[in-house]
Amino acid sequence: MVIVVMGVSGCGKTTISKKLSEQLQLPYYDADDFHPKSNIDKMTNKQALNDEDRWPWLQILSDNITDWSVNEGAVLACSALKESYRILLSSTYKSIIWVYLSGNKSLIKKRIEKRSGHYMSSDLLDAQFKDLEIPDYGIHVDITKSLEHIINTIVSKIT
Image (cartoon, rainbow, N blue to C red; front, side):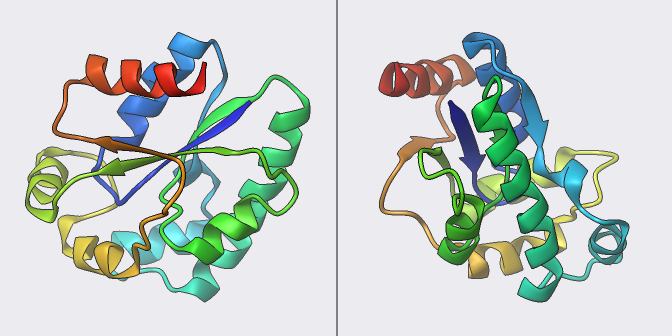
């Protein structure tokens, strides 16, 4: 089983993915760890990534998803903002369980501004919401709910 927890930066992908991986006893991965240095440098300098920046990163993730699917599975925290990105991510493994974390820009901006030590600033949030194509499939979860409620909702829909 491969689960991709998706949404804009600051919606809780890391927290929810880690907790979900513990609950389901699956390895956890953060897509941000697979970005090339050039992407991280660009985001650190408050420059939004474009599709050209993202394609190599998405291909690396797709290759890993294939590997994880034949091994022990995984929970991946990944923005996966556009449908074209999700198509590439699932190009060789079609059975990804998609979990979309839904929240409003105001709440997410407050969350980002409270974070420290992360290269993604709230200045890039508008670009993320502009790129976001909300999937009409998968599990949609409201991020205003408690962590426990969110995890229980996801687990109940996949088991």
